[in-house]
Image: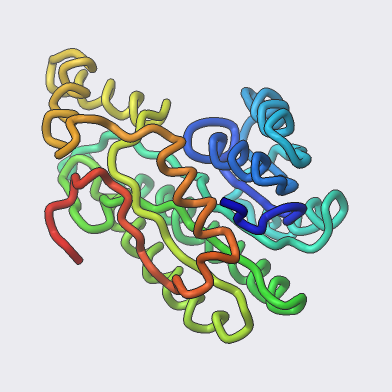
Amino acid sequence: MELGLSRAACIVTGASSGIGRTTARALCAEGANVLLTALETDHLVEAVEEAAAAGGQATGITLDITSEAAAARLLGACRERFGAVDVLVNCAGSNWYRHLSELSDDDLYRQWELNVMALARLLRVVAPEMASHGGGRVVAVGSVSAKQPSAANLAYSVTKAAQVMLVRGFAEEYAPEGVIINSVLPGPVDTPLWRAANEQIAAARGVSAEQIEAEVEQALPRRQVASTLELAQVIVFLASPLAANVVGSAMTVDGGSARQLF
């Protein structure tokens, strides 16, 4: 299916691994031009090369997405290389096991800066820019944890829930100007981040990471953890002109891990 993304200027944050890396490659496969960004250079060069090999063009920039200057830097880098930004996919994120009994102010602030403030700064810069040239697409990768908090990752759940509300607010404000903004809420996805979290949980419980992963898989209706490609395909659709009537949604793509419907 032709998604209408040929030559679209795209930014993907958190693009050196996991969902972000696969999404950057999938966008390039549609003929888009993609600026990949990550906190560290490790794996970013390989991610850029991988994306460029799929089609389109790709380049990379290393920066801390939580810095106040990050949004302006990304916008400037995109303009310089590919022109005005058409698509922003925010995949930057981190998670770690921290039981509620050990949760500190610093844990909460770190997740707030990454999951809420970094995205807010991006939206404040990117949404008006998109509106000024007729529209664009923003997809924020959240988590189904926003719907079902646990004592093991409460800071993550709380800030991901706030992220959903942030996206909805911007979506309603900018949709009349053609800027379509949505969230995607994954469940378990086979990424380095997910595996690292499993190792932390396993260590706390005194079991193997393989046992934790097996328990997660058995709890899913498909008995299978999602691949990054399965998420990327949904994200790329939402980033395309075909998703024009999907506005402010929090699309659950979790393999049925969340039992509630809404």
